[in-house]
Length: 165
Image 1 (cartoon, rainbow, N blue to C red):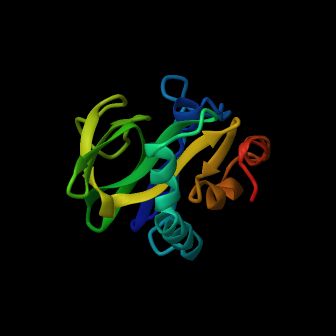
Image 2 (spheres, helix red, strand yellow; image 1 turned 90 degrees about the vertical axis):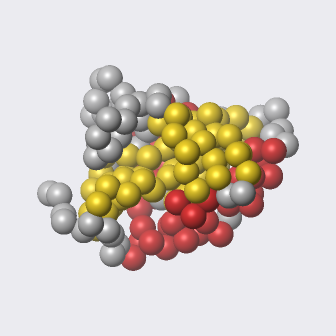
Image 3 (cartoon, rainbow, N blue to C red; image 1 turned 120 degrees about the horizontal axis):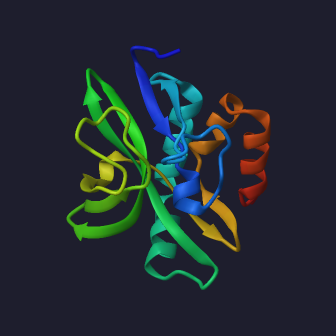
C-alpha cells in the first residue's frame, strides 16, 4: 500500500554490494519499500546513520584492504514533502558539503533519472551509508527497519551479511 506521506526506500544491495534480494526486478534488483515519513523506527535509523557518518568517511578516505563498496543512501525530493532514498555508488567529494554519485538502482519517482546516472547532492540529504568489511555489511542502519517488510528468506540472508558489533 502506498501512503501519501511515504518515504520511498530503494534497496539496491545486489547492485551496490553483490547481495541478491529475491523478488527484486530482474533489470535492476531494486525492490522499493514504502515507509511513512513519520515512521519513528526509520527516523531513528537515519539519525543513527547520520551520527555515525564520520566512520564511513574515515574508511572511505583510508580504506583497509578488506573494506570496499563504499555507498551512501541519499534523499531526493519528489514533491509535497516526499522523497525517494536511493543508494549511490562511485561517491565523490566535491567540496563545500557537495558530493556526486551514481544511482545504484533505478529511481522510481524521479522522472528522467535512470540507474547509472551521475547526480550531485548535499551532505544534508545523506540518510545512510555502508561498505563491506571482510564480506560483511558495515553501516546500513536503514536496512534494519526494512527487514520486517521483506520475505523471511531475504531478510535472513541480509541479517547474515551484516556485521554485528
